[in-house]
Length: 343
Image (tube, rainbow, N blue to C red; front, side, top):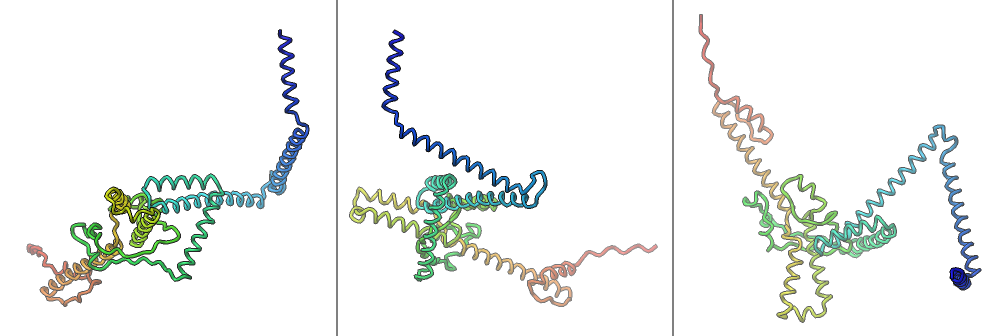
């Protein structure tokens, strides 16, 4: 029985080998293996030659040429690695800023996905470089040669940016929502509001503002206008993509949904302060005027004391504040010491 099974096994193996065996395929596989071995041997020989050339003579003796060559090679390698990381972060930031019309989780996901993609695949960096390079060139062409400057004009007048006492010298953004915010055209090249736009919160503490600076947007009045223009452009694209929008926007069923979308787009970035820069400048100017008034008042009081003391009046100037204050202190009557007893 065992002998029969052995013969049957041999018969099956022989039949399979006869069907599969192809002398031409075997010869091709052997030729491919031989070619790969030769290429591997040539590569190892080339690496050995490069290593021999890099030593520049006896490896046991110091060589300036070998020393600077190794330093240059290390510097080039480090520079290449850091440039790759910087480009990956740059393109991830561009993608995140393009996704600013979506919610914060979408921006964060696209930022890290693009960062991982650029760090893992060099062709991804090349493709993004070509795409945004041509986009930037086209944006410059439209801006400088077609006459479309795309300036952002902020409508911040003296009345609009007047600081209030209730807000500690700052203007309440909600009080200016009814004001005309200005106008701005969307840019072809993505606007870089910040590295990763996550929050619009602005702390009153400098340390917190510094830590959140790469995540806080917008940075100035122009960024506010650009952000609103981008949101308005996105809303128009949504309306154009929905062919029945005009017919259904007055329908009782779709009106709540359309209002919900509008409110979401409008309140996605919170209450934007259209005149933050102008408000800060106005508050600074008011503080300087108040300080100047205090200085002049102090000088006037010092002159009055000098007149009472019979001294010559000092001209009222801001530079004489310290001198007048010192003179006023000297002119103030001091209690006299009791006379010494005569023995």
